[in-house]
Structures are given as C-alpha cells and as structure tokens.
Image 1 (cartoon, rainbow, N blue to C red):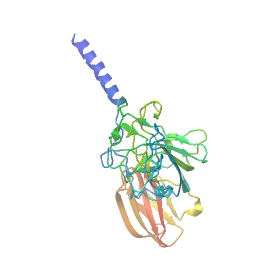
Image 2 (cartoon, one colour):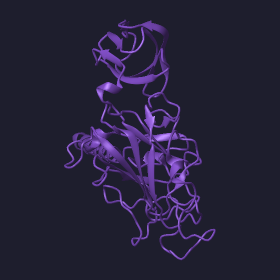
Image 3 (tube, rainbow, N blue to C red):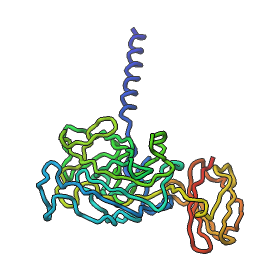
Image 4 (tube, one colour):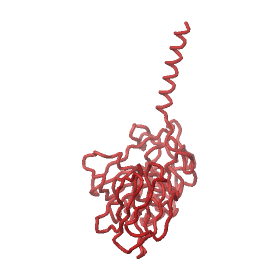
Length: 330
C-alpha cells in the first residue's frame, strides 16, 4: 500500500512539475530581477532608426465610421516621432496599423539581443502590444514568434491592465523609455531572410480585440488580448523608437579593433586614428564595470576580473568620435 501511495505521489508530482513548466512565466517588468527591459540611455545601443513610414489603422476597427477629432484613424504624432532615441514622444499606429523603420546601416545578428522596440506604456501594467517583423530586402518580412497567455474570456478594457510575465516576443511589453529586445538568432535559417543584414523592421499593432472577426493571434494560435477599444487619436501601439545593439559596418567605417574576441583574460586594442583613447565597459544591463582614460594605442588590457558573459566597450577617440564594440568574456 505504501508503494502504491508513493508511486501515485511521484506521478502527481511529475504532473504538477510538467504543468508548471508548461505555464512558465516570461521575463517580468522593467527593474525586476530577470527582466530583459533595456533603458533608453543604456550604452548597449549603438544607433537608432533613421527612417520611418507609417500606415495608420482605424480608431475602432469594429466601427470604421467612429471618429475622434474629425478622423476615423489614429493621427497622433508624426513619422519622425519614431526616429532617434526614445523620448516619450511617439507616433500612434491605430488598430492594426503599422510602421516600417530603416537605418543608416543594416542590423546584424550579434551575441544576445540585436535591437529593441520602445512604446510609451504609462506603467508596468497598461501595455499596448505589437508584432515585430524583419526584412533583409524591404519586400519580404518575417515575424518573430510570439506568445500571449493573457486570458481571452473577457476583453481587456481601454484602461485595463496586462501581466508582462504572460507576454513574450511582442513589442510593448515594457513601460515607457524601456525597450523590448529581440534576438535575430530566433529567425536563423528562415528562407529568404539574411539575419546578418536586416534593412527594415516592421512594427504592427495587434488590435487587441477578442472578437473573432477582428482578433489577431500569437504563434501558438492564442487570441492576443490587450486594452481595446481605445477610442482616441492616440489609439493602438505608440511607437517611440527602435534602438540597435548590433550594426553591420564595412571595415572602412571602423577605427577600433579588438583581438582576440572572445576574450579569455586579455584583449589588445588597436585604433587607426590617434595615439590614445578613453574606454568604458558596460554589461548587458547597462551597468558600468570599467572606466579608464587616455589608454595608449595597442595596449593589452586585463579583463580577467570580468565574469563570463557579453559586454560592450565604448571608445572615445582623440577626434571625438565614439565607437562601440561587443566582447565576449569566456
């Protein structure tokens, strides 16, 4: 009898563990342990979107005759509002509207996350979401797989709330001035896509309506439920910025070279301009871990104090130019 009870207990425990793992939480809001949110001023960003085209969506996709301030489509902000660093001055996309942003250099697949999308969520709970797609030719776009585990039995109202731990790979997961990051490695092997040369990124409002006629779905077939309707000219996803962590540069654009990389203990820095430079190192969260001025060209620097992981080195040259390089500490 004891054996039977023990076996039943083990089976029950295994089932419970399986159930919990199937409902594993995704990263929490900005500032909480385990969050992947990246603040706008983090040194991991090497650039921002420089071009944007917007196709506005309706204020209320279920009633296209509804108007606000004389317009039936979102009209807050301008295309230029999505350019440069996040500043809480976005462009509103409307129900199902989208924006396509471009860059001076192609985005590339580097270690860890490669770019981040910023929305202007009021707090950690009032969140408006968007799909994210990328293209290496400006014609064919490929969507990041996404998950929304928010309940779908009741519509999240206009000023309702969401739980970030139930959302994955949807832009808008984090509050204003904190970007939701995306890793191009997720799309590796996708036919027709060169993840090492992304020229266009598309951000598409998910609508958020749970009515089948207007619903949008995540990669698992779940209806995506977010605040709806939002009957204002600021409706839908509000795109504030797209920051880039990894660009593709031609060698003639580079003045700083590191070797070896990945690094075991020491790295040598060679610059093509000037005889010395200032150098700071930040971890992936943006925390400063090393800072030194007037380092001589061809210096070998001891990085043995760093834990294994990904870091970003910012170099300020004598001519005032700044360049950022990724390093991997083994």
